Length: 399
Image (tube, rainbow, N blue to C red):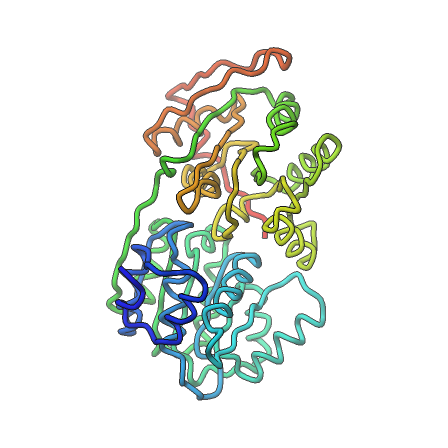
């Protein structure tokens, strides 16, 4: 379906055409008409489905021409990177309008706070924010919500996993009860459904199931001992210039720093991104990676969802994700927009049961590649039914 068939304003269609968008994705087809009708909505859709535009476009349509003072719409996102990306997309789609937006997030300096305070005080149209920093502003009492219309929660499941439920409830307490509510989530666990039941009014439920990796991702795995992982990384990347854009995922920021520090000794154009960098530095790292000045980026799961970086050739899981859905999100960074890509996972003995669970979820036995002879033998593939590390591991997130 073309965007012009969804009832969007001419100026939005012009912006979409200018940006090269012609056809709506399934999530956009199913949600935009209902959002334009001001219905509450809960949508289950993963990264790469076009869900961000699915709520940005109709909200811009509804707000255009509204000159009343105060904040009119708010998008809550779990991470600074995602908040910034959403704000950038809003500014792009709203190019031909007078609508204004601002990203509110932590990690900046006093000048960032003053800019955010000024925008909120003057009544910017759309706020895109992380929960903690937004509450700091709301507690000061200078934000006008008298003409507020719509609240959007993006990556709602991730926000609850990160412990933001009480923050979200507090933010809602500042908003008028008569408003439109839109929940977007990659998964739909019971806690999300309970929150939706408490907040949404007669919502439309939309589900775009992408619980399996794209067919054009070549998946492989190596069975390794921990001491073999770093040497294997070097083996996989050194002299392999065909992989022009590579992401290496690690579960802990300490491991991100360790991997990037080692690889910089062996390879060029390697960077790591973690909460050890201030916000300005993190944005610079992402921009260098997008522009291909950085070839290899080592990151925690903060980049596995939401962040849209094109033409990634290779994704390497330095360790097995704690959640099977996270595996799909991680390797979904490659092979986007009908391209092909490679996803490699390094599996130690303790992670075998977790990876077996992943294989059951995606209904695929991932090929186990033999280690190069000079690295020695790795552990044998063994999965015991009484071992279930998958359910016992606690997720660790880094903001």
